[in-house]
Image (cartoon, rainbow, N blue to C red; front, side, top):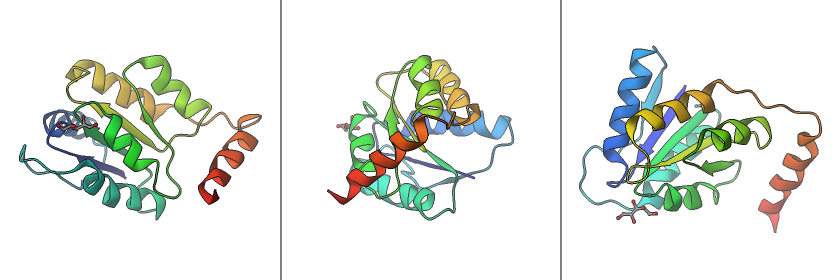
Amino acid sequence: MIALAADHGGYQLKEAVKRHLKAQNIAFIDYGADSEAPVDYADMALPACEAVAGGRCDKALLFCGTGVGISMAANKIKGIRACCCSDAFSAKYTRLHNDANVLCLGGRVVGTGLACELVDLFLNTPFEGGRHEKRIEKLMKLEQK
Ligand code: RB5
């Protein structure tokens, strides 16, 4: 199950990605926003990230204007490893090496075609494990600082 959330700056891209997921029969829960009316990205990130941290969803796809604000918000939530990216290499390697569980995209940065490609890479690339395990462990211990 995939969690989706956006602020007003990412709303249109979220809707496009929803259509892309539906076409592939990928199940999702949409945590809003439901329109382009202004909302705050921190408020929008929290329920979707809690769904991932709590195990209700496997991963989340978050959207704001740049992807940056909502990724900052997501990375403050315990258990979340969020990556804001706009290139295929990062979308792939944040899964392989960082075991990222949240992908953040900028609705004012990437077009629909690239966004859907990044989503597919993110959802279909497994964590490589091995030498990256201890790095993830150290990363998650930073939450306690
Ligand atoms: C909203 O105007 C915009 O600031 C927000 O969507 C995001 O880009 C922040 O990082």
